Length: 276
Image (tube, rainbow, N blue to C red; front, side):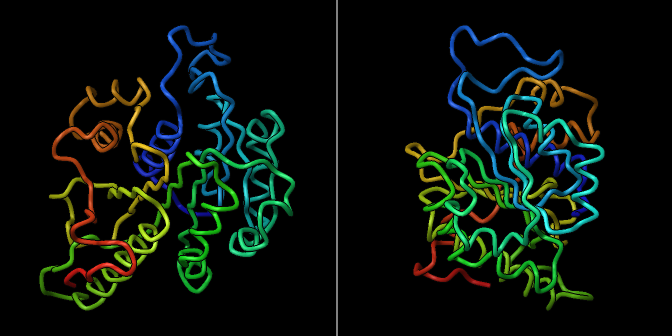
C-alpha cells in the first residue's frame, strides 16, 4: 500500500469527488451520514487503482459514491476486509485482487461493471511496477473503456515540478525527475481535453524536491471545474500553517496556489517540447 499524508489524501479525494459532481440540486436529499453529506443527487461510481491507506475510498463511500478497488498486495486486501468494510457494502462496491496495469488493459467488459464517473490512479510505489501505469495507452484505455464521457481521472504520482533546479547534490536526478513528470503530463494531454496539475506543497516550500503531484484530467465540456466541499472551505480558515489549512488553500486556489505544468510549458504529446 502507498504511504499517504493528510495533505495528499485530502487533496486527491476532495478534488476528484468535487470535480465529478454536477452542481447540487436546490433541495439536496437528506444526508445519509451525520458528518458527511452526499455529493449530489446522482449516484456516482468510482474506480480506485491502488488502495493506498484506504482513507480515500472511505471518504467517497461516506458521501454516497460506490467505490470499486483494484489492489494487488494481499496485505492491503486483508486490511480492507478487516478494517474498511464500509466501502465494500456501499451499493454493491467490489474489490478486485489484481495488478492494476493488467486489469486496465483487459478492459472493463471483463469486470461486468458500468462506466465510472471518477477514476483515481494512485499507484506510485515506484520501480518497474509503476512505469506501465503511466503509459499513454493506459490513459487512453481508461478514457475510452472505463470512464463516462464526462468522467474525471485523478493521477497521483511522485514528481519534480521545477525545470531548472538549483545546483548541489542530486541536481541531475532532479532534472531527470522533472522530465519524467513532464512526460506523464504530456501523455495525459494527448488523451484528455483538459488537464490541470498541482503539487501538495506551496511553491516556496522545497521547490526543488520531488513531491506528490496530482493531475486532474477530463474530456467534459467546460474542462476542469472545482466544487469544493464545505468542510474544505472551513479548513481554509483554520489556524495558519496546519496541514488542514495548507491542503485547503491548495484545493480552494487561495493564493499562493500550487498549480504546476501549465499548457504553455508542457503541451500535449506531439506539441512543441518544453525546455528542460
